[in-house]
Image 1 (tube, helix red, strand yellow):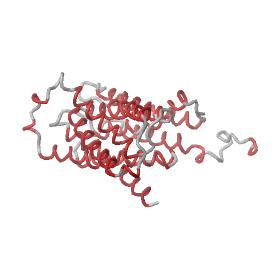
Image 2 (cartoon, helix red, strand yellow):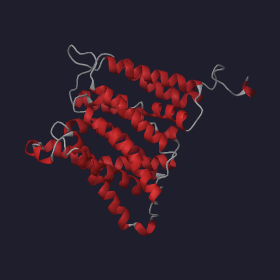
Image 3 (cartoon, rainbow, N blue to C red):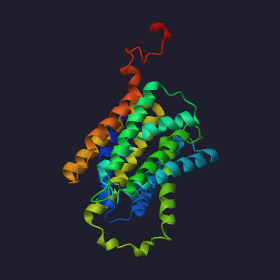
Image 4 (cartoon, helix red, strand yellow):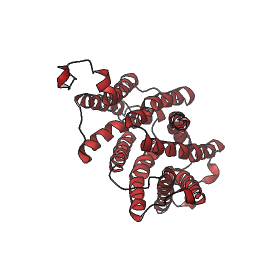
Amino acid sequence: MIQIILSYLTIYVVWSTTAFIIKTAVQGIPAFYLFGMRFLIGGAILLLIAVVTRKKRQMPSISQFAGSLFIGLLLLIGGNGLITFALQKLDSYVTALVISTIPICVLVFDRLILKTHITLHAIIGVSMGISGVLILILNSGRGNVSIHPYIFIVVVAVIIWALGMSLGKKIPMSQDTIINSGIQQFSMGLISLIMIQPFQPVGSVAWGDVTNNQWMALIYLTVFGTIAITCFLYLLRIEPNERVVTYNFITPLGSAFIGIVIGGEAIIPGLVPSAFLILAGLAVTFYGEKIFNKTRFFNRNPNNR
């Protein structure tokens, strides 16, 4: 029980800070170098732990290894990598609010891919969440530009991440959290560093201009980011989804506080209504049945009619 509680607390705290920490780091470290280094090192540590404790673990099959690589490509490069790139230009709290709609997108993909049933309250919740994101998009620009183009990168990243989560329920992967997370992080970090070389060779980066704060941000992301992702995968395996998604109610608020109060990021128009719609949409989507179980319109049990 204590492991579950600590895992939730770790996700709540670390993921509330991640967007702002990434934004700090990418001001000096190119996005895909930051992404590559944090996951290469973090993944290597996890794989080393797996090797040292291999007698207690079941090594993945070839199909499970391939499954971990494919899902890692979607979650980490398609999701986390694009978000890291977008944070070069976007405010961290705006990015975090858009990211919080991932469970809503997962619900849609679960319906399309896994043929799960979508209830009326879920449709209402999804509509509210999408409306909140649209408000953010329409007010994301600065100066004479009303819409910031980088916010669309975050939207694409959210869609890819959600697709990876839904496909992850069908594609075989290692059931060992340490091994699965290590494979995904190490391989995607390595791929990222290789892919960026033709466009931005390592020698072209002004490493001498990277500040101590930016290096500390990289260390923070490598250590605590790796721990948080591993805790998330652990909770996904043993906890019901309606509990796991509660981080989406905490982290946007934490990110907004850190970005605005500590980071001095400007408050965009429409922040309050968009945040309300997104968080309320999440609540209606995942807890609507409990919220409306006494309302005849939402009650689908014929025995209660």
